[in-house]
Image (cartoon, rainbow, N blue to C red; front, top):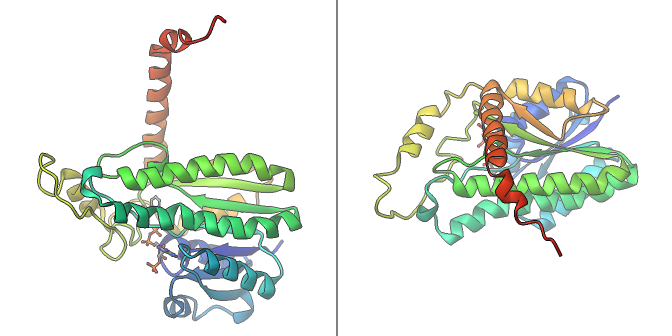
Length: 278
Ligand SMILES: NC(=O)c1ccc[n+]([C@@H]2O[C@H](COP(=O)([O-])OP(=O)(O)OC[C@H]3O[C@@H](n4cnc5c(N)ncnc54)[C@H](OP(=O)(O)O)[C@@H]3O)[C@@H](O)[C@H]2O)c1
């Protein structure tokens, strides 16, 4: 059955590939982005009846509400919401200013909340819908040099897991997507941000920056295949709550989960020791 997909940050990267995969499967797409010109360029070849291009900087609550309203006026419903827009604020925690942290949360967390809050009433009325929230392996474990980005993705995880419980009664499903390293502009200067302060003792720009720069446009994950996987998930009656994308994600998160279980068992007696005997 043909679905209506609403995708944030659809001008390039994973968002654009998800949009392409949805169109390929015969669905209609509301492709949103901060600027209309790149959207027009990215979807110039798509039949106008299959696509709506809508300006949306997710950091603006008013624009999020307007974009959702435009989508409903155009296609009558929203079956699948993909909260994809986001970027990485990297660098050691002490390198990053309060302003930069607020900007990271304004997009990755509060922006996602604005779009989600605007869309849920539509899905509730339909008594159906599927929300994909883009997290990261950085939403499942911490990484050196990524504290603020990871904090934003952990927020996405906590929000998604809790909202999923609240909206299941309306037939709305929520899936958190945790990609490993995917070949997009994510680590490019056009997207990534590094710290703007220089604290002593961490070494030059930090080893993690060299590692991330070394990965740029060499990542193993294929965003087109991630798009196809999401289309498959959106067709499932019982999709996962958390979906790991890529062999790297499976290995890294699997190891972290095992480590957490091991640590939990090691300290289990001390954990139980705090039970009250009132
Ligand atoms: N690629 C990876 O390895 C990877 C791994 C884990 C998670 N992710 C997550 O996947 C999502 C997409 O990343 P990507 O790899 O596709 O990166 P990308 O190639 O840099 O694309 C990011 C997209 O997000 C948009 N965006 C950023 N801030 C926005 C805002 N305030 N409002 C609306 N759109 C905004 C960008 O729009 P502009 O063109 O206007 O800048 C762009 O379309 C992100 O949430 C990211 O955290 C990526």
